[in-house]
Length: 266
Picture 1 (cartoon, one colour):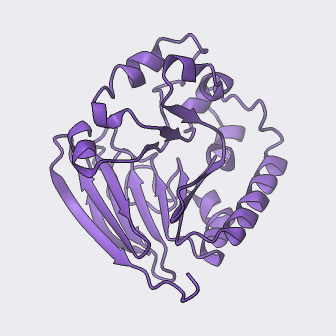
Picture 2: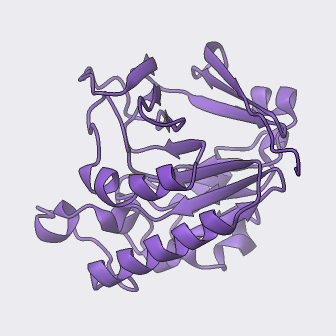
């Protein structure tokens, strides 16, 4: 990542959740923050802002700790919130807190404990989140609209599709002409194209515990699948998007690009 980051001269990094495995952080003084973040991503090119969403494993710990600005005193790169927007002029990134959508975490958590402080009741939280997201997407004048969440929307790997997101979130993305949905959750790399909209689903969840050995095709068009560890990059201009997936050695596994015709007033 450090080498590729240097070549691309990156502006920032996005983490798609499950930032601290396996049970999030215990508190702001948890050494896992330094052991799994600060001491790992040491390359000069990666000393840029890191925008992170929460994953389901983060919710198994102390969520307030991960969201606490005190962590920025330890490492000022760290920017983690539940749902937020990053405006990078030609593109707006809409970060969505997807874990509360998944019903089984609420009704059948098995042996896991989820930190729902600030979230419960679920229905009200999701309703407000979707309303705010719809309004923000509608008002956005960015050339590119990209939504980032932890959970898969479409996936051919271990976790598969997240039905709650397909029912509740996907219609908002389609109606507001979102270009890309970027997620983690499944420990692999994927690119799937929607068959009934321009939306592209990009999974970059290959941080660890990969090689699941699961492949289950779905109704949309699978363009790329790598059942292993790695990461992705995204380069944008007003009219062009370039996506690349890499293995752990920085070797390019797959490239994809798309062009966009801008309206005359833009």
